[in-house]
Amino acid sequence: MINPKVHPEILIDKCISLPEKQAVKKYHHIFFDLDRTLWDFESNSREALTEIFHNHKLEQYFSTPDHFIILYHHHNNSLWESYRHGKLKKETLRSLRFNLTLKDVDVDNPVLAKIIDDQYLRLSTDKTHVFPYTFEILEYLFPRYSLYILTNGFRETQFSKLKNSGLSRYFNSVFTSETIGYNKPHPKIFQWAVSSVNARKNECLMIGDDFEVDILGARYFGMDQVFFNPQNLSFDRKASYEIKSLIELKNIL
Image: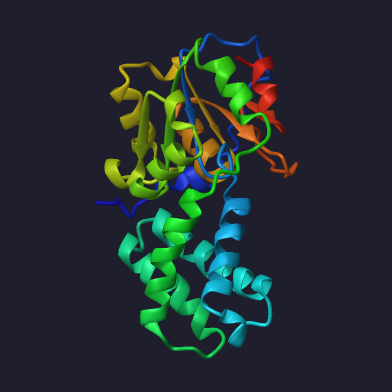
């Protein structure tokens, strides 16, 4: 069961600053987030939603595919935020996201919403777009480190994404919040993953794109982090390391 309580210190920085960047440490275990870190969520989702728009002739409700996609992501992002903090169950998230999107254009059709949701899960996980240098950096890291996925995504979809995009062969294990019972940024999901691989936290490194979820979560657990920041977003706090391209991991590992 997802614990609804998230430590407040995860969400609020207590003016704890990291020391100046030191010499590269010796890591043995590398944990990657999947969506928006390796697997290009935006590109894959857009392709799937555009296909759904045309398959179901949604132009009768939405002015353009972009109109449909923007409304969907608005609701999906809001529902995922509630899910991450234990305020919403997976089944509720899935039943609401397309239902609310359709209601935005005055369509009350839960049956259609469920059909679209089922099709979206199947279509999106079949997509194979990954970020630039994903395979190059995994080929570099694979012989040198033990690699893992640590994700808040649904178990069945994450395994399908990894398999269909050719990423699964690089990873020793896939840890999902759904299986562990805690969502990132809760420290217990990091503790579970590290303990499961018989590692010490100072031997581990977390790589992810979400500053609150991946970086602050790992930081307050005591694990070093790499903030994957291709959009060059600015935050008051700092990660252990920051990169704009995955190939820059060669400068750290």
